[in-house]
Structure formats: structure tokens, C-alpha cells
Image 1 (cartoon, rainbow, N blue to C red):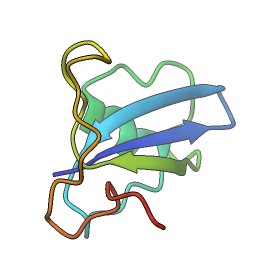
Image 2 (cartoon, rainbow, N blue to C red):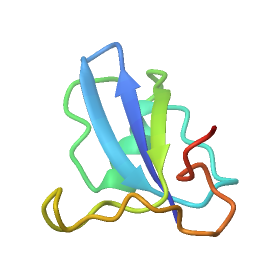
Image 3 (cartoon, one colour):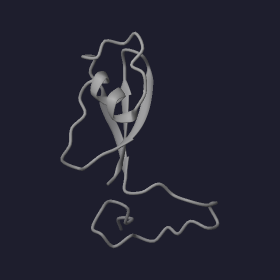
Image 4 (tube, one colour):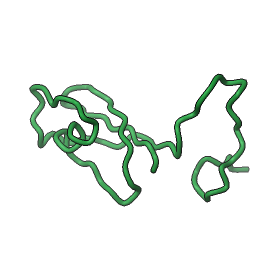
Length: 80
């Protein structure tokens, strides 16, 4: 499952969550539930915008992380 970053313009927060590619997170309430965070004073119906996704979080230092594509047909492969 990929990681996705969502931004809520209403409260200025950006939150990263992991979910299936077909799932959609469109409101702050849904995002807060998915991320396991308190929604605070932001209305649960406030819209969120998906910023980016990542197939898997990198692990280790930059010297240890391979830049090779994973081979799963995702967007991690550099384009010529």
C-alpha cells in the first residue's frame, strides 16, 4: 500500500497516511480517523487535498538506499 500526503487548507496541516490505491480521503474527519489523530477544532467536513504518494518509505541513510525501480510497475522508476 502506498503512502499519501494530504493537506488541509483550513488548518494548514499536512498529514501522511497509508491506504489502498482505490480508497479516497476527501475530508479532514476521514483523514484524522485514518491517521489516528485528533481532529481538533477543524470541522470534519473540511476538504483535504492529496499532495503526493510514495510506494514505500525509504529506510536507512542516503548511502544505503537504492534508487533502483522496484519492478512493480509503479511510479518509482525514473523516466527517460
